[in-house]
Length: 276
Image 1: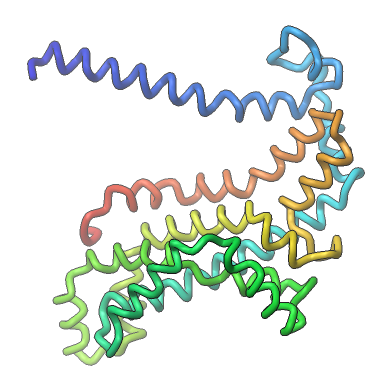
Image 2 (image 1 turned 180 degrees about the vertical axis):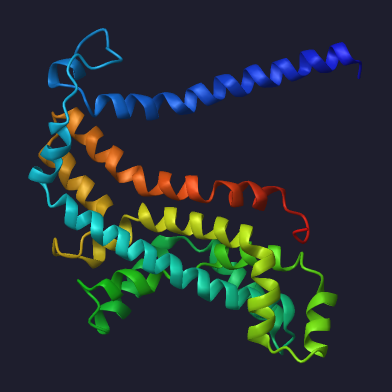
């Protein structure tokens, strides 16, 4: 391909990506600006980008309508606990699948992988009956524990563990290192990017989880943010700016995590072997 054709091709890709970026950014910017608008600004036609009066009281209204702070803390606690437990279990599981040989390993791997194809609605009733039998209704344990295992997270981490040369692991075994030392000094340090990415995906999934917390909780004390947003919609169906203010506050933890783990996320996409 000639240089002139390559330049035209690059410009086409750039314009295409720019248009796609604007399309994705537009709803986000509109949500932030709308959270500061008055009722008149929200329903003005043609729509106004900037609010005529910046109303910070929209955020206060959210807390007056529903126990938003309680829902927020519940979501933070359950999401962090679920993410931590899920990543720990997935690291141990991925290590076993990748580096250990034991009877029935292939059958077990196929069985775990097959759970990825089972819709959640199929497991909801059995899970609910088990949790109810264990008196887990309206408890943090009932929200957290049933959602701890994830085959996707396990295989995401194991795919990066597989990129670590087995000769390195074998040499550590010859030197007398045990399983936990090998995992702590060789495997995990060389897979930080993949573990960070898995943690980000895991937290995002638990943060926006709606169905399971909805059916397992009946009291405000244990309800999470997605359920609280549903009640807010019922309370403020005509107050669009209040819903936007709540949405802005709801996405803050995810944005903070993305900023903190952005480098690891990029590395995990491009990583093909050991970190130099």
